[in-house]
Image 1 (cartoon, rainbow, N blue to C red):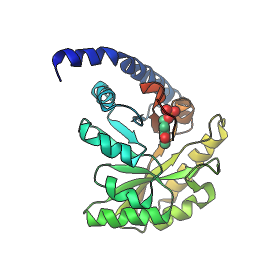
Image 2: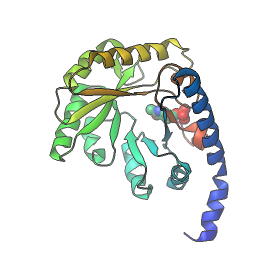
Image 3: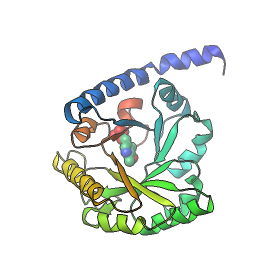
Image 4: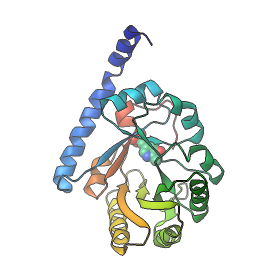
Length: 240
Ligand SMILES: *Cc1c(COP(=O)(O)O)cnc(C)c1O
C-alpha cells in the first residue's frame, strides 16, 4: 500500500476514532459511577467490517476483536494486525470448531456439553487449554442460542470436568429493549457461580452489553462490552 493511499484511508476512518473516543469516555464514566473504576474491556465486533477498518481500530487502541462467523473469519484473519486478540462470539457448530481452535484465545458462545466436549478434544489434540464463556439465554428467547438460565450451573459443573477447557465466565445477549431486570439476573447468576468456586473454573468475565446498552450492562456488572455498530457504523447486512 502506498503512503498516499494509507493517508487517504486514515482520513476516511477518522469517524472510527471519534466513535472509539466516545465509547471510551462513556465506559470510563460508567465504570467510575457503578464499579469503583474496575477494569472493563471494550471489544470491537467485526462482522461485515473490512480488515483495513478493523486494523485502524486496533491501531487506535482496541486490542480485542469479536468474530461471529467462521467462514468470514477464515477469509479475513490473515489480514488482521497480529497484536489483536480474537474471541469467537457467534453461534458455533460442533463440526466447525476445528477451523478456529488455533486462532482464537477464547470462545464466548459455549452453550452445550456436546460443543464443550469437541472443544476439549481438539484442544487436547493441539496441546492447549481453551478458555470459554458460557452463553446464557437470559431472556429465554426461542430464536436465540445459549443455555437456559436454570441449566447454567449444571452445565458449568459438567464442563469443569473437561481437562482442556477452562470456564472463564458468562456471556449473554439480553433481549433488545428488555430493561434492567435481565441484566441484573445475569449479574446475580455470575456472582452466585463465582461464589461456588467450582473446581477448574475461574469466573473472571461477564460479557454483556452492545452498542445500544453497554452502559446499562456496566451498571449491572459487565466487564466486557461488545461493540459493533457504535464503533464502525451500520452494517451492510443484518445478522447475528
Ligand atoms: C453483532 C454482535 C454484537 C454487536 O452488536 P452492535 O449492536 O452492533 O454493537 C455483540 N455481540 C454479539 C454476539 C453480536 O453478534
